[in-house]
Length: 344
Image 1 (cartoon, rainbow, N blue to C red):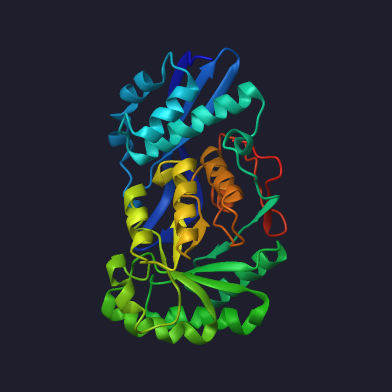
Image 2 (cartoon, rainbow, N blue to C red):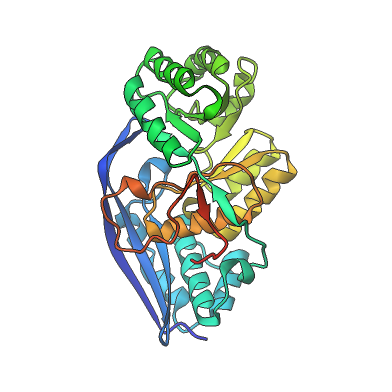
């Protein structure tokens, strides 16, 4: 099997309503589809552009396309996967993950095997997902949470740090009062608070039984000091900038929970390696999308199905977009995504 054609195609996904996080407001999401072809078989990967999380811009990513095409063309896909692991070629993580996904997809489609079989892993039959509530209005938050519960989603991540602390407390209080122990609450501040703010704010949430908070401060080096002020578990998200940073965070026991976005970290295999290191260190792992299109979400779902975790994962983001050019294989139902038939 030799790759005979390589195509890069830009795409834009429009949000149904602006997606607000950490002082950012997105109306659309850009990316590229990478397609590789052998005979009648194709494989597809997605390059996720999310500059607030440190990815290259679309223009910067395009500069690597000729190099990536040269790396792929007229080569055996198995050799390409081996070279990605050994690091013989250096691409931005978003390009590397797309190359890996496209090549794995091509091998699976050609050989009629699943990603789990190719990677010699046993997949979970299903993966639990969380929902996201981002409104600053407590009543809107309660209504959104009720809709999620009706769809079987019981773990709810609430965006905080978008307004004043009193509005954050009001919506968390309303959610806990209305749903009591029917829901598990997570918080996500997207690094909005300073250390001085976080050490005051976090204790205020403790009585609401918070599972963990993602990125209360931008700099994870403050996590150890924050633990002196709160019992809430701290999760690293934005500060997981690349594979080496993730490894360093785990080795130094910085977070209680690692948030891994496979498309931003370099792909499935690097994400699985990080999850294994985290598990060995007693650190939980949650897999999330990076607001990806349907093609990119496949990578996140496959990763979540292969890491042996009972945590709820952030995979239910397809509903945020108006339309997607790619088919969505993994639509959540009753709080889970069915992963017994993995495809990528």
